[in-house]
Amino acid sequence: MTEKELQTYLLKRFPKEDTGCDWKEMKNLKNSFANDPHKDVVSYLSGIANMEGGHLVIGVKDGTLDIVGTDLSKFNFDSTSVTYKMVEMCPNLPTEGLFVEEFVTTDTGKTVWIINIPKHLPRRPVLAHKKKWQRIGDSLVELTSERENVILNEEIVHYDWSAEVVEDAGYSDLDEEAVQKALDGYCERYPKRANDARNWSMETFLDKAKVTKNGKITRTALLLLGKEESVHYLNHPAEMVWKLQTGEERAAQIFYPPFLLTAIKLREEIRNYQIKIFPSNALLPSPVPKYDQRSLLEALHNCIMHQDYTKKERIVVTETADSVQFQNAGTFYEGKYSDYIEGEKTPTKYRNEFLKSAMLNLNMVDSQGFGIHDMYEHQRDRYLPMPDYDSSTDTHVIMVMPGQVINIEYSTALMENSSLDLTTVFLLDRVQRNKPISKEARIRLRKLKLIEGRYPHIIVSCKVAQLTNMEAEYTDLKGFDDNYYKDLILKLISDHIKLRRDKIDKLLYGKLPNALNDRQKKNHIDYLLKCLRKAGKIHVGANKNWELGTESSTPK
Image 1 (cartoon, one colour):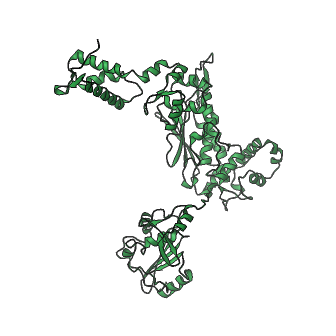
Image 2 (image 1 turned 180 degrees about the horizontal axis):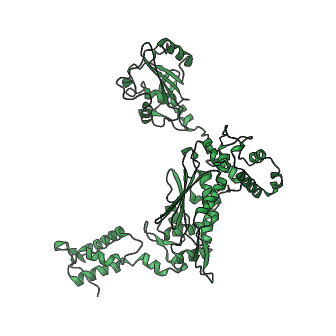
Image 3 (image 1 turned 90 degrees about the vertical axis):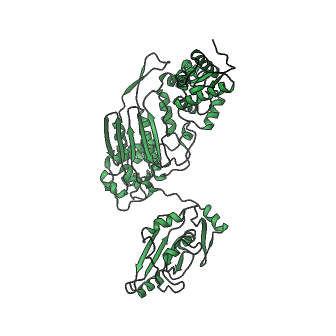
């Protein structure tokens, strides 16, 4: 484009300056990029983004759009790499839609940049130089309180990836067996509609089941019912990976849509042999499957339903010798997992609302918040440890389903006691397994006199120990009174006159509570020695040996 042609193009595309468009000469971009608050590029990025987004045209005269060009010779960024610098210098500036168009005139060699600036994210004003800016007319000013309030109180419109229509896909891309299985599930969910449903056309059925939209194939339809070879329409991996890691034995398999069928096939790969439990209210040992089949499928369906598909990740199921781990992208969308243990909380919103509705209608899941509750109940009924989500991160939900009894006496006795509600069983199960519990949970258990000790060295109380026939284990965890340990120290030093610290440690380590780790045991011995020295009963003599003090009265 010649200089004249470029000017004509710009005038046609940007006929006037307004809150969404600004023309700037900025003849030297190195000096004009981020060196002058209120007048530089990054300030205008903030100002335009904090309105409705728009464009900043650089290298033209304000008012006429005469081409003057901008000098990039000493600027360290090109039209591609500069976007990263913009994001770095403008907190909250969205990356989606942020890019630079570069034009160089063919006759005069002048460079013009058009920066495409996206609108700010909902409720997140964009900053530059640690300030928020906005456009008022053709002026750039600091963000007014009125405009900031508008931004901070914007309604957030949720994007449902699963609801999008795939225009190029058709009914031929759906798996016939999966569609039939879907119809069977729908009739099970709604038995009063079953007779009518079996006479509907496929198009009518899928629309009524909210799998398709007005006869059009959705991403949900392809995930649940689509043929494996139709996955390319999703622009997403759409994979579930099963891995087996048990000692030297390793195996793996990838499962593709239709997830309605392949979720069951993945479950069948999980080794589910019988184990024996010995509840005291039964005459004979009870063989039970290592895993509850309903819980495995529930966990897998939860991964499918709650996965954050915008992350373009796979669902990963990892089987070890004593557990199965389920991982999906995203976080809990409403509340935290412990909110759902009792089955009393009902979620009010979902990440994938359309996918949830389809899975509900096809009898794959429930939407009342009972899924997690049921998994916990199934574990309790089989006298196995509770599922946990401790490995979850800010980016992934990770649920571990135990398949092994850690302490059978404790587990069976505790779970046989029907007076304890499910949440209390869950919390005591965590205490017994040395897993952390919240401050609120500790307060709750203390009020019920179910735990003892100071955080983080909490143990189940004498009351629970008696309930679960674990009096000996309770004493082992609780340990003895500090005077007992002090007497041991004094007796040891009395017998040997002089003693180095490692000899004292050797005596006490095996006698201190098992609830303490090695570092905590060392710290507690430090405390005991400090108390004895302060009381004048011992002191440190030559060569750092501990000796009896003048106030010592050693036990016989």
